[in-house]
Image (cartoon, rainbow, N blue to C red; front, side, top):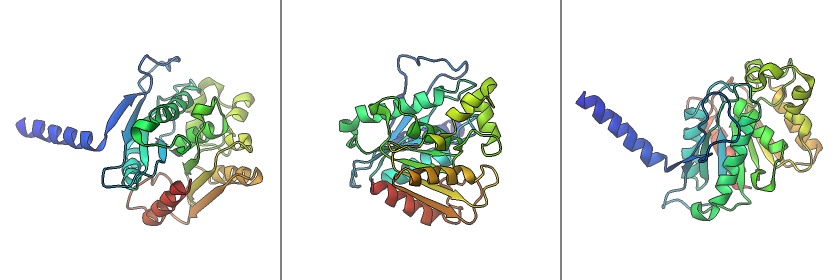
Amino acid sequence: MKRQLLSLALIATSLCAMAQQVINVWPDGPADDNGADNLATLTVYTPGADVENTGIAMVICPGGGYAMLALDHEGHQMAKILADNGITATVLKYRLPNGHHNIPADDAREAIRIVRRNADKWGVNPDKVGISGFSAGGHLASTVLTHHADSLSVPSYGLLFYPVVSARPGITHDGSANNLLGDKVGQSKWVAEYSNAEHVDKTTPPTMLLLSSNDDTVWVDNSLQFYKALVDNGIETEMHIYPIGGHGWGMHPHFKYHDVMTRAMIDWIKGR
């Protein structure tokens, strides 16, 4: 028992050292209830004293099909890499929609506002706050990139990893669409609303896409459609399609192109 307690204490100490601050996204309670877990949090990683702070920040949205969150390899691991490179990184534990389609985007927009409100405290340039997302988290990020609520919550740039982008049957990831839309899934109004490539316009922020050509979980046409829409609207964009890797590699070092991908990611972010 003592050994177990010691192990738990060491784990807790380690997590506290890495996760510099955990913020309740809605300290007074969210406006909308998803009927399940209503706690959204933002874990903040700021560059260490020995790292030059770039003034750039990122809100990270892990994937999980809108049914769970891959918080480690699509969240905290990325945040550590970014902080080591002088980028303030925040990992968003957003509330799952549970059929309430607006809730994840509400959380993501508020996360961006929180970063901007704390810009001076964290050494962040409020004009350099981006959003990234993986898979269904990429759908969430692309929603925020294309559906603007107010100036404080519009990202400065985007980074999408093997994202779900469309809600259209035959293109979308069915599980993600079902979990996001609930009983509204397949309805033409909501299919159009959440087919985010169709909402790209000249106000969409610069966006980078990274994926594998052999992804058999989220069809690559999601990324291709978003990329084409960005190009057609004259938005700065960059897309990296790796020949193998499948789906869900995140920041796993065993991904064959991990080092190449990481360098491309850092270069893109630092170019904002």
